[in-house]
Image (cartoon, rainbow, N blue to C red; front, side, top):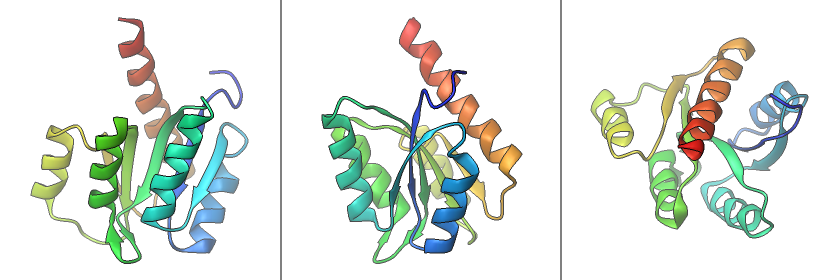
Amino acid sequence: MHKKEHTLLICDDEPDLLELYAAMLSDNYKIVKATSGEECIRKYIETKEKRNDIAVILLDFRIGEVTGDKVARDIKEINGAKIILISAYEIDRDLIQRLKDERVIVEFVSKPITLDTLKRIIVKTILIDDLSDKN
């Protein structure tokens, strides 16, 4: 993978975690940050309009007044991106499976997550996307 070839949109309402994820991943990816569901959707649209597609969205499940599954569904309606839903809280497994089955999210991971694991999941998600584009 070429350095900073792909853009990640990271959405978390905890500023310290948002900055930590951005710092951990900025050596390998262009980073766009959002602190709310509304900002996540707005930045996704703005970035797409600039012809700079977002490869993956790291989306916290609890982001203020709205839940990550709602934001993920809204993004899917726009012309969805690959979304990795993350949470420090236990989320209903049936909901997660439904979101995967409906292709609203690609993966769900629990916090805390190691940098190596997060990078592996992102690379896997991008590669799946790149392979489907070539077919």
